[in-house]
Image 1: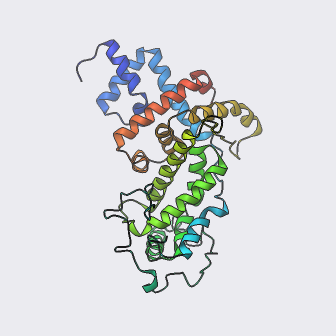
Image 2 (image 1 turned 180 degrees about the horizontal axis):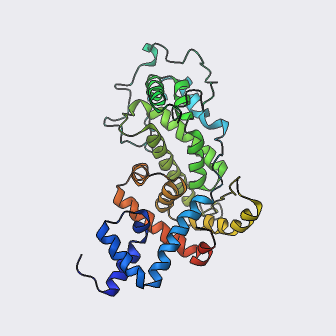
Image 3 (image 1 turned 90 degrees about the horizontal axis):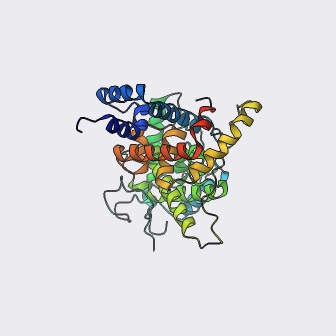
Length: 90
Length: 247
């Protein structure tokens, strides 16, 4: 990666917003994005939006606590009654 | 004829081809049918609780014991082993498919494929990861089948129905209902690999390493998919709606 100009920094930062909020960037790369986002409203907004998105996706899923249907093992039971796993007739 | 363990069964634990060679012979096993409960009526979510948080060492031992019995042909042991993950697996399928009825059908198929392939499971990943990988493969297969349906039969990408969290206050539920619908539409509109990435990492909260393994790609590729998925969902929902989500 060569020395980026301001435009290069912006494109690079936009490509790494997700990695940034994941904490995946190396310290030097993180500082680079920090420096750029400090003066770039678009990237600052991007970081906030990515964080909000992850929070929203995780927090809004009300499926937690749902139970699997009682039928989930029906086919396996049927196959199991006919022989061992991986047997030719399974 | 589909070979035992089928094409959708992940093969990372299967260095040898599927088939009867080397498969434990249930007829020669000490208790192949699970004599204690041959009808498989034991609570699959089970007393064994292989994933139990209370005693991790004991749970691991129990899981190993159930796995050995299942690989020897004991379907009851298989149910107890897999039953510990059944609820999570079903929820994953609802999230990936957006349709509880289809998720139920695919969940049955996942368990069937897991049962057929369990003799080849080598423990190179956790059992949970292996099972989840089968589920992702089967969900993708179902989505491909859906996409191939002729026009007029297919209803296209179904909006993922993300119900309100039970603990949400009514006012909060109302506030979030629009965002929830928008998220459901955005997730349903993603190509399956991107949807899988965001569901495994952001909805399920799995680590990148585990999610990548389940998705069947390297971590770098997985992160790239996740990034693409987040960008698309963000674009579909809009920063303004996200800003009001309390994140």
